[in-house]
Image (cartoon, rainbow, N blue to C red; front, top):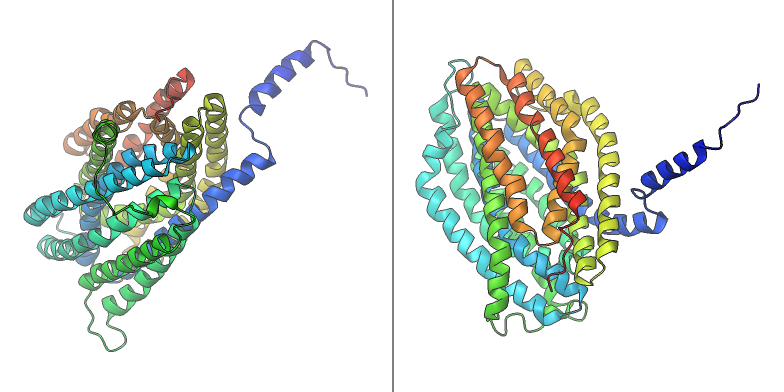
Length: 476
């Protein structure tokens, strides 16, 4: 049997092929992207894997200790994201200064980061020390079935006070590490992070369970282990930076003066404040969503704690690709290659979505295995496995939204990213979760599915913003 083709089909197929091809890079493109992304994936992967181990270790303790530390870590998450947002505004300029080979400009952004973390550290301490207990208490609902709420509150607050100390070395390490990554040096921060998280795992095991002749400190041991690990990370990244000045010229004279040109400072602040506000409002919005879920009892708190830690381990793929996208596209915009930046952006987003579809399948298959590692009841394990499956189904879409955010940010569209990220959470996600958690009898899983699915609308908004092309601007 012979199959005939209408010649009129070929132009149509050619057009379709060209439309698909613009989302696919060549071998050199993927080699460039992976060379930048793989070290970031390794760094984030080891960090999140050790976080999972830490979470499992604490999960071997009582339900109250597990719940208390999980809630305290949500408050620490808000602090960490605010710091990330504060450093990101400077990072936009760092990447573009590097693109035009301006080392003095990078020195100024480095100094701006130091001022930023100092202000944020003081603010975090001023808020969380006096208000830590009432904030933790708002996440604890006494359902009369799972654990002692007062005990969970006490464990959570004590853990929080020690964990706050870890912010000092952690933020200083991020000043160095973020600047190194933005100037193309991703391996040293990766190695520092690897050393820190491995040390964290060892310290936590020894201090939580009382090994090597030391007393068992429980959740306080977990917090102390984090402090010690962050000090190690800071020392490594500082020593490498100051002994490799030939590779990173900006470090020469970085502390000779702490002055920043007033006009540059003003421009960074204009870009920085929306990012800082966005990360703070987004992370606090996530905490409020979890507070809504926590109205379903301490079992819900522990299931969310387990599922979030596991999901974060798999999310490193699109998170790392988003970081690479911001660096590559930022460098190209700084060099004035606008169309090349748009092409790179489009192809990385497509690559991220395809990759995340595969990762999501693996995540669903492994979800019951991860929950078996925790010392929890079968009901809590089943809840956590279901939550992980929901997050896996949303991963390709979350990948798209995440990369839309970094695309807009790379071009300096910080106010737009603020509306895209935080305004969406506070205007749509939080009101929906609040109303459903307070005025319906929905159980945790359907409540979580409805609130998570709202991100599909965010993807539509992101696609429209990217299609306009107005984000692609040179700033320096």
